[in-house]
Image (tube, rainbow, N blue to C red; front, side, top):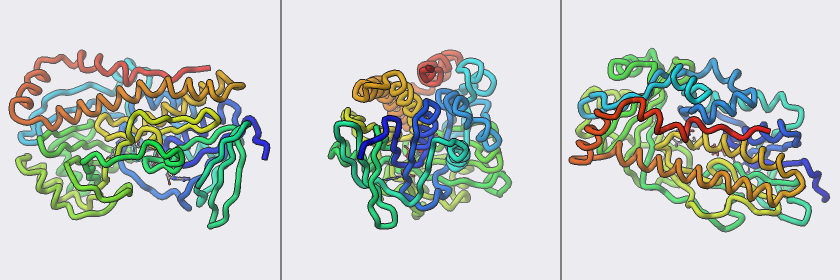
Length: 403
Ligand SMILES: Cc1cc2nc3c(=O)[nH]c(=O)nc-3n(C[C@H](O)[C@H](O)[C@H](O)COP(=O)(O)OP(=O)(O)OC[C@H]3O[C@@H](n4cnc5c(N)ncnc54)[C@H](O)[C@@H]3O)c2cc1C
């Protein structure tokens, strides 16, 4: 089967796959997205969407569709979970938008996926097939042929490129027998409560509605912010935990979480008890160092390439950035797939590695204990907000290449 030179196959209709489809279609590619799930259910919970991601969503015409379901927080506030004392405040709102050229927003993942789907649905050059899992791929002289399982029947499709956007347990990454994901030893606990519920009202006593609040404690950290246009509050807690399998989320007994809350302020402990039901998410990360591309015509994006622990709140943002950079590299080297893919990988890996390091640093400081926690609090007390803001320029001020 002779592949059309502008045909791209995308495996996975999550945030990274849908953004990649839009970015490529904007550059004149014809894109077919295959999604294993037969329906795109409301999976996930809250996402912080920093300006490095929102400026891409704006460029792709997604942000206007998403905006009504988002909240633009005024600040990120760090608090001690034991005393609830404020330790630091990074201003967002207007200041973030002016400094980094796009808004810092918080949203529910399902709302972002819906906005992407609405945009995809209007694009004449994108086809989306649900209930279709990409099982295999052959790379040949003039592109790739993907084998797709639809209702137990395998069909083949040829293309110039296969993009693996199939998440942390990626089939496409696995086909190269490289880079398995590993359990990080951490569990994320997530719940979304209605702002007007009892738990929602109790939460607003601890932290105001219009900010992102992170509570720090040696055995747990919690992050809370509004989603659904302010109608709900997303709460995520991270503790140590046992591996619970390769699943995104599972309802579990919150006893481990309750235990990790020992020493936290009673109001916070009560809130966590009242905020049930919690789902727990095993945090897996993909080993760094494995290839993200096969020069003949495979590229990984999003969690498939670099699933990371969420401590820098950048997993989805990195998938969105991947999409924009991949589209740029392909358009800039239209006749040389291998060079385009090499440029994509070279551009993305160092930045993603830096984000992963930033996440590890956040985790270290948020879970600090004893003298380290004391030193952290002293440093935060004397560090002006302007310096904290400046230290984020490389991350939030990043702009996807144009043209
Ligand atoms: C607790 C927690 C908090 C987070 N907070 C943030 C945050 O604040 N900000 C942020 O930017 N990120 C955050 N993240 C990370 C973010 O949720 C993920 O990085 C992002 O959703 C991954 O998107 P993806 O499209 O790469 O993968 P996925 O969303 O996993 O999508 C992959 C898709 O591929 C499909 N699929 C799988 N196999 C196949 C196949 N063989 N063929 C076809 N389709 C297939 C799946 O069904 C799925 O729809 C957080 C994550 C967690 C766990």
